[in-house]
Image (cartoon, rainbow, N blue to C red; front, top):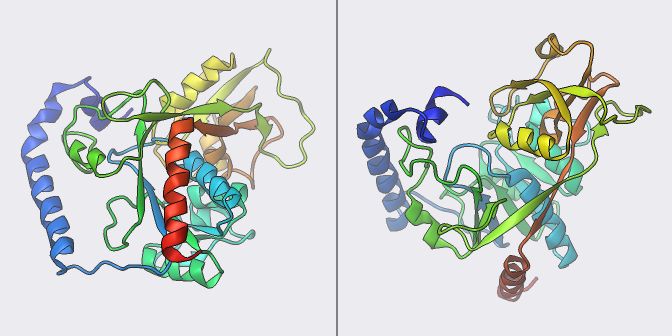
Length: 329
């Protein structure tokens, strides 16, 4: 946890000295939303439904596994989904493209590569989400899932799903930089689809989704080694909330020698593992996609699947039926 996060989540009071900057952030955000509302800043309406999955806090809330689940659910309902992803940590620059099987996580971003590998649907990456949407529609997609685009008001949306971290919640409830909020908690009342990652729902959410950690899988393709719970491993993590990963390992009774945390979207190299000698390594699947080219036979990742509340799924399916009729899909 970095020193900003320690302040946001109650470990340091010095963070409140940044409240004047949070006031400025609030004012600029308000002005930006107002400019979109009156039409001085242009927003784009697409000829297909757009579902935005995002959060109002900085850091991980489980968006990537949720998007993978949502895409699978859309396919079950007969839609042809595509995913719009910003491509954080990628080498794209100003390029927009659809992820191919040859693209590495370094080229297109770890989240985009992981979604493409797991969902097997077109995933478009790049800074310009409108261009990405056009690329996906050209591939025949008739519904678009925008991954982490809640504050991207240039793209109009038909459905917003907001995710909350069950353990960290909203932190100290302050806007950036004195708190973790990108928008005020009022934003949670703008959609009925507010869902929490783990833990029982709180005043901020009606629903939750449970994560299930599957048996570890080797990162190195073709590895014949078996994961041994009697051994201890180095845990390596570069996600928004590494403590959630470490907690999952503990719940799976996986013994750890050391924990090595990196910033979210860290581009791993072999040198990052210099201290991981004499034992195996275990990491998240999101981190693993960046290590395929140099992974060792005793390196493992922990796959995650999710299961949302049945009532959340029921409401979602009702809304999807409405969108299908509205767009004639």
